[in-house]
Image (cartoon, rainbow, N blue to C red; front, top):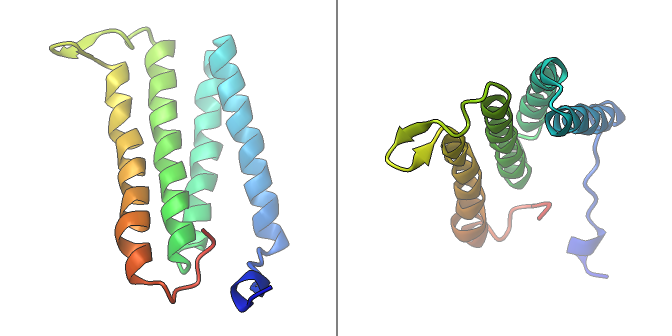
Length: 134
C-alpha cells in the first residue's frame, strides 16, 4: 500500500450526522415528488438545500470536495425547480420555441456538469500534488 492509499479523510461525527440527515430530507423530498404530495415536497426543499450549502461551505478547504458538493447543490436546485414546475402544472408551458419551463432545470444541471468538468479536466491535472478525495 503506497502513501496515497494510507491517507485518511476524516469527517467530524457532527458533520457526518448532518450529511446523513441530508439524505433523509432528500429522500422525503423525492418521495413527495413521486407521490405528488406538494406541501411536503416543497417544504423539504428548504432543509435539503440548506444542508447541501452548509456541507459545501464546510468542505471549501478541500477543492475536490467543494466541487462535488457544489455540483450536488445545483443538482438539488435543478431537481427542486423541476419538481415545483410539475407541482404547479407549468412544466410543459413553452418558454421559447420548443423549450418548456421544465427544460429550464437544465441550467443548474449543466452548471453542475461544468463544475465537475472544470475540476477533472483543468484543476486536477494541474494540481497533482493536491490531496483529493477523488
